[in-house]
Amino acid sequence: MPPTDSTPAACKRKLHLTCDLYPAVLIVIFLLTAINGFYNSLNTEYGRAHTTFLFTPGDRHGDLLKAALSFPPDRPIAHPEQIPSTLLSHPYQGLSGVDQGKLTDLHAPPLDILYFLGVKQLLIRFGPTRVIELYYALSLIAVVWLAAKFSRNLREGFLVGGVLLLSYPFLMVLSRGNAPALLTSLALIFCIYELLVRRRGIAAALAFALAFNCRPNILLLAPIFLVLEWRALLRAALVFGIAAPLLFGVSYLLSIHLYEGYNFAVFQKALAIYYQKYVLGILGEPYNNSLYGVFHPLVTMLNLQPGAQDRALHLLLWMITFGAALSILGFACLYLRRQIDAYAYIFAIGSLYVLGSSVLATYHLFFLFIFILLLAIPKAFDAKADIRDVHLWIIGTTAFLLVPKDYLFHHGISFEIIANPLVLSLCLLAIFRSRRSVAEAVSLKALWESLTGARP
Image (tube, rainbow, N blue to C red; front, side, top):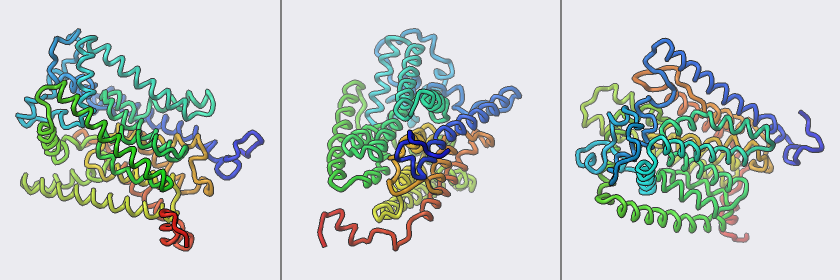
């Protein structure tokens, strides 16, 4: 559709393609999610073993109710009959579970511990049903806010909101009751928006500090702040350096005060158990989206001795993490030399965060929505760039990652744990190949002068 006088100035270049892409991509996400939902409903109808593309019914709201119930309440909870029997039959353990070497939620950061303790108090006062209703209401409000922020008119707002609400990662967030995962994604979305659109490093740093305290390994994403001018980068680093430890310290002190017996030594023991059972063991295989998740089953198929298998998996994980870290440095160099734009650069760093993590469940992918939502804001793209093939790769890859692909199953593992890392890796290759030539790149001397303010 040719641009008219009412078309925003940014859309009068080739970037006007985004005005048509945005609703089209959202509709594709909705349709592909519906198709997989229909497929799984047929599984239920015909008695197939795997009957849902969400978590199994026994784990429904596990990160909301079961996790909170692992902290023994000091008073009886209201309406205990409302707790599903499936959660009571396989409860999480608290301090006693750590002593017995069982998987608990005490490996979580202190801010998450405060969330569980807060949910426990709500269970005591209001009961499970009201807690679930409150959680759903707050989650819906967050998504409505996102839809309002990234919509250009009311009709588009309904489309964006509907797709976000019915997207696979968000449905899994609701299914698990995992508020920290949703909060992490919302904080990252806000952080990337502030960096790419508003160029406000302090606001982005505060959001990043919040996300870090929910999921510490998002520190791999820290290089996205290189899109800031160097003085703004220093201010953002200072704000993060103050806000992140402060929030960690306050939440830790509150946690040990509210949960008697909890301390850093307990956290370390719980984290070691999590690593053994969830990372080296098989509990982390379903819904994983990292490269480690692709190769983990292959190593276990070798039928090595338990000690040798653990060493092989440990080595595999560190090789992948080290490779992701080197790749992040490589893409940072490409961006600083202006061989790729900020949109492609931040997506590349986000992709390497997904691929380089040990376990990254599908509900953690919700933050990737920002790379589609930014289509509503053309100035998020490099002013000198239009929608090029590499941007279409990024948009298509993001849409692919955000839809369920539970069509092939093996021991309850979805086909997506192979497809998602593969497509992400191909997209990274496309970004690398799309880089501007060395002749067009900023020289190292000019780069140093721009960073230091030196004059030739």
